[in-house]
Length: 375
Image 1: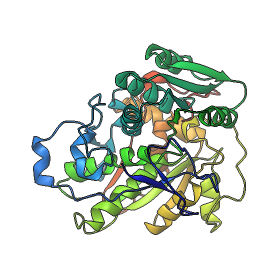
Image 2: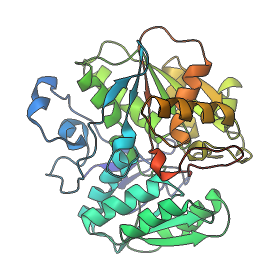
Image 3: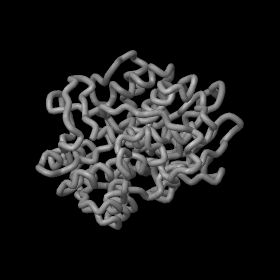
Image 4: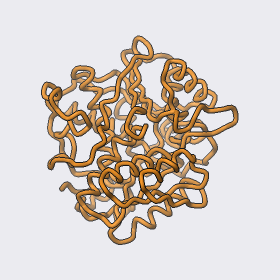
């Protein structure tokens, strides 16, 4: 099994040690893993899930047992040059399945007493579903006020729901305290790098569907940044193996109400100086005031020649309805990237936006209401 490594302290730990963060700086781990090139011509005969990219996945050295047929989501045009990847068609109706399947496979192999996750939305439902598939004992910590529909989904999969008084940050603190107990695997989408190696399959699928090419621009939502960092990881792998001849620009999107990374980026900062104030927003799924991988996110966007954009609730509401009128019913957070693209001059070349979560989980955003669920 591969090893964890701290990108700041260079401390290492075996990936089977259940050590969920660097013991020195308490930051998130990276994974000491080198992918091998994927053969485009071989993919037609492979399993129809994200495990088809076995050479690029750290847990594919053995035959993986956990899957719900995740991945291979459609790419559909919105304009002549802009397409949407429909990740809301995943088994649990969000892109979080890409990372959850990796964490569930990791837990299945390690056999902890229990698996713990914290979420007020899609990550929690995905961990609960894949935990059920893997036969794991799971507990999902959620803040009070979490969407009843998402609580119902978590419980339906057999996971225990632990409601924490307070906001999303209080919930994360409670889960991390529980994660320090013996024989517990913390299935954190923000801290465990296996999650990023799952989300990178988003870009591998684009590469496959576009015949060995990538779009000129990838527009990506950023809260904890798991999709953007996974995308950046895949781009570097594909470019490093000579499978693409250029890297796409990464455009990161945050909610205007909670946009610490956008503020840091435009101020020329390399990391967050302080957590952002948390204000209500329709795009709750990306309203993260203090993402643990902030420095990595800022670095990845700058290295690509990209930028950050912010969107207002009015723009999100309009974009959600516009997508619905095009036959695409997504939750408010999932409309944020389309809102950002609609509000800015069209970029040269081709662009792809992800539609990350289904509208059936939240309903339409009404005037003066909030829905979505931070992940």
